[in-house]
Image (cartoon, rainbow, N blue to C red; front, side, top):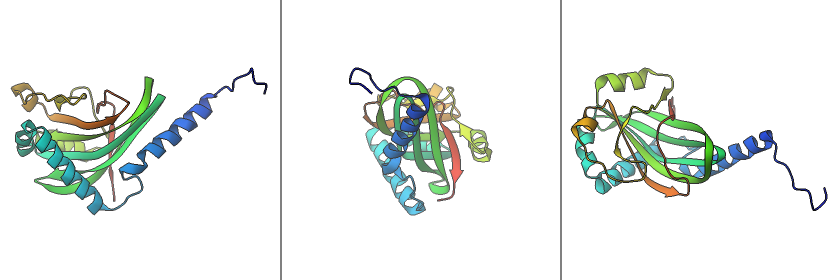
Length: 190
């Protein structure tokens, strides 16, 4: 190739590069770590940080029928992107199952970010549907108690009557606007 020609990136090459970037970015969040005790320790630390940083979530946590904690989700994208993380579902303060989260994205995006998410299941019905599903996908009907930019929202009557309340916090990186919509959660055996 002459110096005046630029290399062209095929769609396949781009997709493989993005897959590699996503896997590489996820290496620090427990990918390949099959130790439940490590996940539980990260869940404990994440809940403590959430409750300290956003005291309005303590009351929500106390009222929740179950809490799914994803201590570290790594998301990367360059046009196409993805996210991955592992965590635990707690009922009455005890881990009952371990989960992974996977998200694929497309559109105008570039960068990478890491963040934590906590889903509060406020009704037995919502918790039951989540636990019975083979792959539960978060929808746009979630209420946010801590928003995607880290702002604290009040625990209003509207949020506390929602079946699932989400907190996205601790965001670090250059990919802004982390949300849980479109994220799929699947049970794993650590």
